[in-house]
Image 1 (cartoon, rainbow, N blue to C red):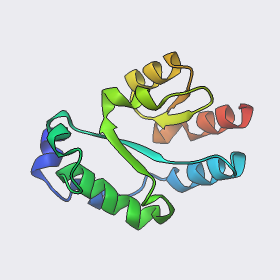
Image 2 (image 1 turned 180 degrees about the vertical axis):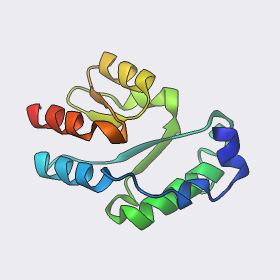
Image 3 (image 1 turned 45 degrees about the horizontal axis):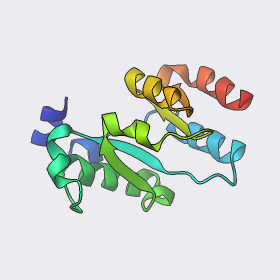
Image 4 (image 1 turned 90 degrees about the vertical axis):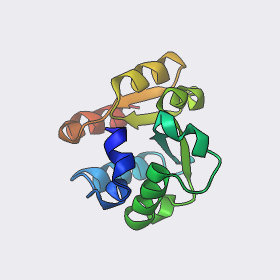
Length: 131
């Protein structure tokens, strides 16, 4: 997938939000009003060399997407490799992610990881309410 993304520079920024995106953000805001909230987003392995630069193909597209659809997070984005996401896990840190391996690694570091898919919103909602 990342090869396609890197060849199609506008890929990330032209994606439409998933149908439950905004409901999920509101649910998190309501449940944890005082918690610090960031977006932890993966960049492809071959973009590691761009990590300290302002723009890289997927990073640029994701930043534009977040600025458009979630402007309150435009200065709260953390970019890293997928395998590095676990390094941000601490007790009570919540991650909702669509990658099973990432969730497993997050939970192993005492964080709270919830597997996301657009079709499991009700399950995510239930898990968040139970926290």
